[in-house]
Length: 186
Ligand SMILES: [Mg+2]
Image (cartoon, rainbow, N blue to C red; front, side, top):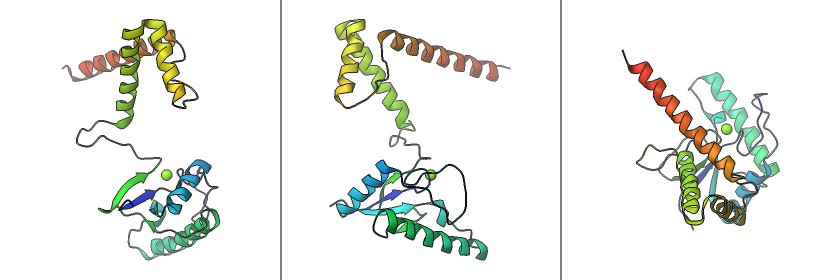
């Protein structure tokens, strides 16, 4: 069994969120995330609601709101998860994962955003495939590989879309560089 706990954000991650309504209002569960959390709980993993709803500044009025928020979250969990799970807004050494719609994952010790890395890896795979199989067949082969992995839609539906995206990305990067140079040149 894995040690440590998994933090799951509430609003926008486990429960649907559009706008703030009230401290006692929590949106409907998001099916994919709810099923994931239920699976973890069934596996005996330590899952905790990780939410700013229970953050406090130490004032009495805020403490009262947190008290009410905890009640609402407990009721929501019992209704949708079938159990009460711990609620916190504090990270500690035992937290092994945090699932949150605001989080940006960085690759350890690099400062690189995981999204950028994944996109770079995908583009690299397309370029490798094109080098191996030629342009059209290379893109098609990569798309087939991704579809076999269960992707409903692939990033580059066609070879020309791939070229357009690549040129667009390079043009964007060049424009950003030009802006930086312009801004920093006296
Ligand atoms: Mg959120």
